[in-house]
Image (cartoon, rainbow, N blue to C red; front, side, top):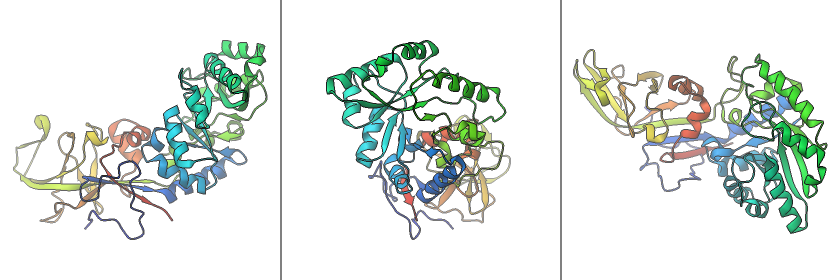
Length: 383
């Protein structure tokens, strides 16, 4: 049966939380860097001849940007996207000079100098952000690189039409800017038949014609699979790199990346008619055996996620509510004496994907991955 030990050939490292040893941790998170690199190659083939960047915001969707990004650099990735300036500064320290690092949320007031010092490229989402960056360029007496994001219909980030028109009428606003990219973001790319996709692409084409010539980017992970017209010069996959299905209505073209298993803390007999867990939301219909595993909503496992763990190929249904630090499983189908305390139960892996877990929780794989906590012992594997 499974045990909480690393298999031969694994790279046993924890970039974010080195203090959590295998013996001390309640659960183990495995990240397959070789699978991430293989997914990058798959996306590169789909997107050719467009260049493929990597979105590593939110600490590479919770998987550890300091480990993920260098693996992608080895695969040839030269452009990375983060959400915040602070994330960009941390990533620059991990990657040092070389790759471009773009900051999707742009420049908060007062962050301009820190952004320039770390050699980051802000994605300018408004005229005030552009003006502040241009002013810093003037003060430094050198041009500063930037991307411009325009709002093509998602109404989340990007210059609205009136600001685009103002910029087109006053090109001197770009006097100190080395414009590297003009981009926008698709709202409905994971729904290929949604009319918003064609609408946003048409708006993006119209907006681009008003701005100086620069490489363009529109497609996120799912957008890569919408067809050649959405690829432009650069695509920006995030979730697909980490194994989340970018084509939800079709089989997943990406390799799984994440494994998650939790240790058994205790096994007990539960008489028929007894309530289990908070609120006694589950009552044993007959005598059963239950095992408590060391993971809960404090680790990012959704409180009302109706799911199962697996020991080998045997499903072990959750019973009762997910607690902060523990989940109770029905282990009645296992042989007497199994599982033993310290054995590990698979929660994400060969029998249950990240997307499966998201479906049980009524959410999306993005939220599952980014919600994973920092109490796990982490094992990174690679070729």
